[in-house]
Image (cartoon, rainbow, N blue to C red; front, side, top):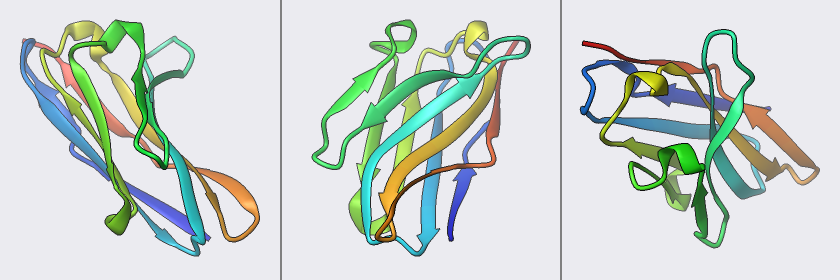
Length: 118
């Protein structure tokens, strides 16, 4: 079984920055694409950014130029650097990974709250 531990959320003023971290532990043979999703109150969960096991990244248009995703394969970790935060970035942010143990599986983190407000 795999556990995802997220950290780094909190309250920040508009224009500020936060860095989210997600570390995976447990039975992992291989780690594939790692993602960050978010869900704002009353809205559907949406994909924010993803990074493949080869290091290719993509981010949603709403956060392009402000958010950067990265990973550390040695630590089974994924990060989301969030700059120039806006009130509309307020949401619960979830880490999501694809992995094998060796069966192909997926796992979600518990979520971390990000609130952007003055």
